[in-house]
Image (tube, helix red, strand yellow):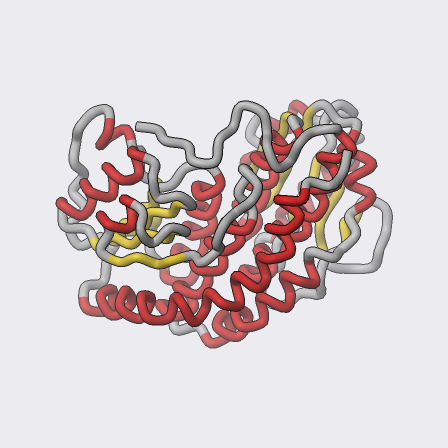
Length: 342
């Protein structure tokens, strides 16, 4: 089977998308930040599905750490099934979606806006119903995604959230890291994770682990393994893994860990060492000299931006893993491009 042309092309275009995105997002971000400065929220509520929900996990990390604001994920069925309105007056509601056409996100955004929330939509289609219902529209600019499984738009979502946070928190180091992101994404996509290819091609189930900025990456990796490789994978926080799931550790469950570049690194490293003592097969994505069990990664720059580069390296692996497992990464079975739920 040949490489999936769609997902391969999407992977190659991601860096250019992020490069163009910065200028496109500047005007709507300026307007949103001005509103947030005039009316500072005390809470951020996110709403998303699928890969976009993992982008929302990244948003939680960014907003809580850099802006010191609590972040909660909305349960869309509160609006769509139970027909209840949340009291979100003066709070920030952030919807994230590739298509902007899932009914539950649209109805929840409408509920949030009618309740007095500041509503912002990160969406790839600026003419979608979700964009129309939202007060601020932040176009991802990913363009056409050729593969059913979203990759380019996920990277674009994380980059857009990084840009928003850098401006909102007035963080010059994050601004500089965001400016370097396109070049580093291109480099990350060229890294050789062949050791993981060999280990995962014959796996029946596996675990992905992250913490801090890489928890979202672990969750996205697990979803993409299911979608494109028909490989069962579950994601955990390095802290949460000790609360029960660690009982799974054994030869049958390879583990892929995404090491963060910030203060969360120590706890993940301690877990990895413990898992290896227990006999687990663990692959860790981290900078450093090539050695057994280490997936090569870029030299450290900024921990939040580096996490985005880490998923790009994983996507490059994913293309080749699907070939090894004989699956169609462009057209996963039972999936469609736009998923509509209520």
